[in-house]
Image (tube, rainbow, N blue to C red):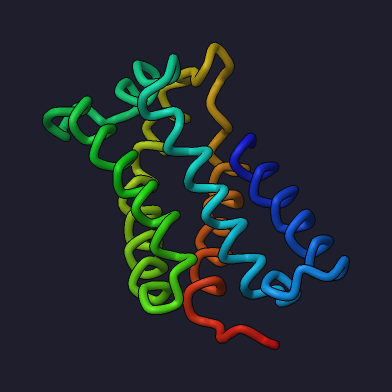
Length: 150
């Protein structure tokens, strides 16, 4: 839920700054791209912090080298966060992040079905997690494929 809140609050902040006169973010698509970047920087931070063991535990047993997979996805999240705000790489970053969200979803299903925890709290149940995933996917695709409006 923290990543969702970070994305929503940062989107509102960027839009407010745009209305207040910061011309660059006075565009909801640009603000969304920045908010998506914040989302992935927040999620990436867990890949090396105290939540790392929980993320490793979320990897289904059939996937080898769970710790390496967590590291790789963290690096990809950081790369995606950077590349989605660079106009020349926005579409590529969006496609990559969307594929990564789809590829990581089985780990969320596994974690929910096995009642795992993240940061000492139960992971989000599969229903709400699926809805969050759809929101994240929609935000990533809109940020990457819609042209700036102004």
